[in-house]
Image (cartoon, rainbow, N blue to C red; front, side, top):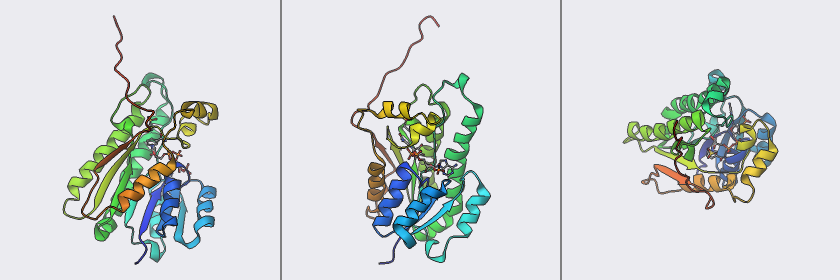
Length: 250
Ligand code: NDP
Ligand code: 8X3
């Protein structure tokens, strides 16, 4: 059987790195995008010719196009796109947020994801391929300090479902994966590098791991071709829902 090809964005850490490894171990050809070239080099060192990496900022459309144009012939037939690269920046309430951070989240989590999807749709339709968009429970459940991050993930969830409509009859599968609390570099990035805050958040919580999400994506990739999982929400057992708040006499 000919090896399939997957493109994973944000493959230098967390869910993306675990997904790149899971698929490469299984013999898929993996295209790995991220900014940190040294991390991508580790994947190349591990998997050699099964991996093609491109160090780029996915907010840079020209860099993205150049990377796609430069794909070696045997990595061009992309069967699966995992739109994973993304981030939260800051935990402050909206009036105290940094507008530049809001813009970076929108540019990465929304604009870059839509741009790459647009560029790869012809190939994915031709291949009857699959799109997995990494959303979040933050796209469905509002929380204080979630502001633009949660809203960007609501976009990802709804975009995924609208793609299902527009790709009707093409055989292309689309899934929105919506994880809850997962221990990756996510909180380190969100807090500007506060390892203590990150450790404190996850301590004793038995959070989701990168491997858990990689396994979920692997499961999605290997479903019978007639099945589409529209949305999949995954949480640690230790995480559940909290209530509303009331500002009395406000
Ligand atoms: P990590 O911080 O561990 O990984 C994020 C990845 O995104 C890195 O590989 C990073 O690579 C890449 N990335 C970020 N910005 C850019 C950019 N401009 N260009 C290219 N790559 C970029 O976090 P996670 O693995 O947790 O996050 C992956 C996805 O999962 C995100 O979309 C996140 O919102 C989502 N998510 C995370 C949850 C969690 O609790 N951890 C829960 C639900 C969803 P580099 O820095 O090298 O560019
Ligand atoms: C990450 C999950 O709850 O920290 O998307 O926003 S949460």
